[in-house]
Image (cartoon, rainbow, N blue to C red; front, side):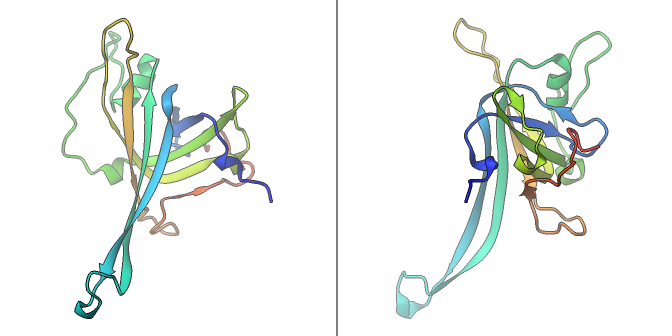
Length: 181
């Protein structure tokens, strides 16, 4: 049985806002694209069993997507910072506080790259339903350090009808388009 293409080695392209007008390719990455999920368990104990668990209950999963962007265009940096390029070409760096991230979240698609080509086969893509990028800046001016924009997506479990309790899926239907429109 062949291995799913998702599990092969190699870089990937990230599209934020997949399925919406204004969906964007976030840019070049440095250090990989890392999707993780951890599931927590709470032990059930009894005095008669000492410290050994007699049962356990699943208490939930947490998923995150981490990327480090580099060599961005002004538009890509503005998108990452949740702002826009000003008419004068400047990009404001603002304090971000007090918003419901679930309401601002969008779909993300991860597309593997092979032979310098982004996969056009939707069966190799990973779709995350509700994600919001939490951004940092790491700009060092010296002769050796590349400037980067670390981005950690908060991946929410969906509350939408038909998708409740799901983070996303591996593989999309045949015929899915580049930006989902």
